[in-house]
Length: 353
Image: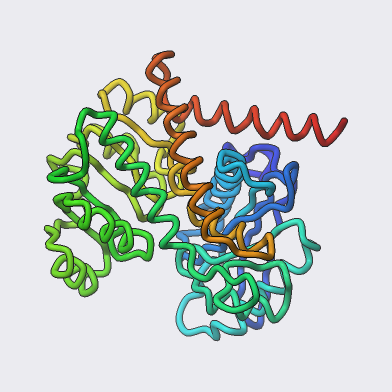
């Protein structure tokens, strides 16, 4: 299957395949849209089954970044990159230097940052080869790890959904968190525990999972059993496509709201959640805190107050989506997609005028 006929291809402006035999680099960079500004989105390093899986991931993620950035009302476009993690031992610094050279070849059309499997330190390595990198731990406007702000945005989204479901606050609300040991998942659990939620958690990192459970008084379940929990909220904070034909019938929740990107395996999963009476918070709306934090760095004058104001805006946008979904009887993800595409098209028309 070619890129143009790929089901996840959405008229992406550019898709770059970058390899470096010496370091073992195999990377794909997807630039979905630069209508509102340079495409911005993190770099993910993962052990993909094959290049087809990596391509599908980068196409979906880069489109999601366009939607996320426009829904957060940021003056940037959407892009994403993935690195196929090499087998065996490899020189991490040399790998990310090679990746930096690939970023530089795009001449500022894409600005990268850290994502799953990548750290701020890796981005400092990339910075040695290109200036088109953000989310750095050093520098005049350095914003550092965006995970805490992403977690705060997701926490706000969960809290808003809980209120819409008829619960006054998070005290005693039962929440299952998938991906508890990731940066965002860990910070999110901290917020939820402080608010009085009862937590059920899972992750593949068992030693760290036990530490988190002890720290916050959470219950541990097997990674596959997380879908079967009798809880109020399911918060996916790992990888995507976890709401799929094999898992959706197992959910016993009132709400799905989490940090993971592309939680719905297919667009129609949103409708199926709605038919089951499950409120869904579109992922790219509530998990936009990280890119908001990064945008503060891109602007050159990081301002925490500006970041908090943008998080307030996310809550308002989520409310508009959920209001329309209820009044129109249509899935929240469909409403969000339509709003995002309309905003991008509005920018395209304005740019062409």
